[in-house]
Length: 210
Image (tube, rainbow, N blue to C red; front, side, top):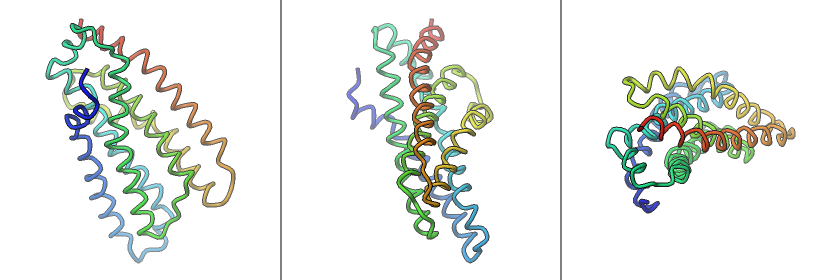
């Protein structure tokens, strides 16, 4: 199996999406300068921009491996597909979700918006769920053209509960209310999504290649 640091280098294209988010967020922040009424909606807009940005990249989790024949090679070599899946989730989360979370912190601070620690945990958990569900859809849609548009149409409704939970956590945190129930709910969703995809994704990959 490829060493993790080499795989990080080979998947470095994932880090381009945070720059796209940075550009969109910068334009939005510039447009709402001097408009106090728009600041109330800024957290919602920035979170939705972040999620949409991630959704446009998650479809590449297995697409490149399919195009280059690596999926078939892994099966021929008897590679541990479950381990490969977990590595891909970790790599995408590290190269895409974490940088976007750091950029969110920068833009929130630049707009003088609070950035509670609970929101950090909430968005990080939402990123795990997004990556797991995105990997499932990416293997189901292998070989289909215009996958980005289809992925957005399918994934955004699935991620809507996570978006609402993340924004709900943010609102309750800045008001000083308890957020443990929301965070526990998101943790449960993330664990279930990851566990189900860990079982289903390798099975779909084997079926697709064979």
